Figure 1 (cartoon, rainbow, N blue to C red):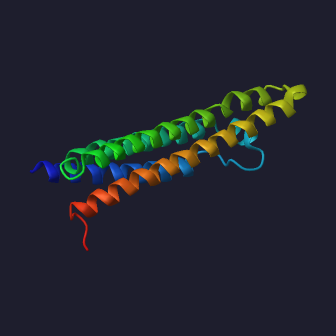
Figure 2 (cartoon, rainbow, N blue to C red; figure 1 turned 120 degrees about the vertical axis):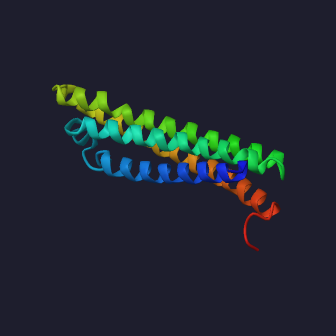
Figure 3 (cartoon, one colour; figure 1 turned 180 degrees about the vertical axis):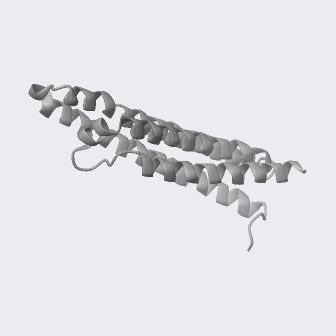
Length: 163
């Protein structure tokens, strides 16, 4: 098997793993609308499974970039490296989003334990974590778009896409 074929196989496999991981994560995690803390308290295992799948997806985004780098480097080394850098930034911000998601669990447990005098504070902290998660996700998506633009440019220059 040629190195290019091996890279293509690794990239395709990682892409499928990422797709499945995100779909499972979205289905597994508790709903993040309404009474979020009650939903998290009722299903901490689902939150953990969702977080683990999101982490897997973040890792695959870096893996895809690393798998494609040797194939793209001969055509445009700078853009190939930029793609790796931006996909790594993407994964980093997705990990920040997962940490914010996991931060909901202790708040939900405190609310469930009967900290009724702190209910407003706990809900405010949960809202702040969800907002931070949303912002981190947006930054991750922006990094994805820049990395994808690098890929598109290199693939076009290398004549690896139909014209």
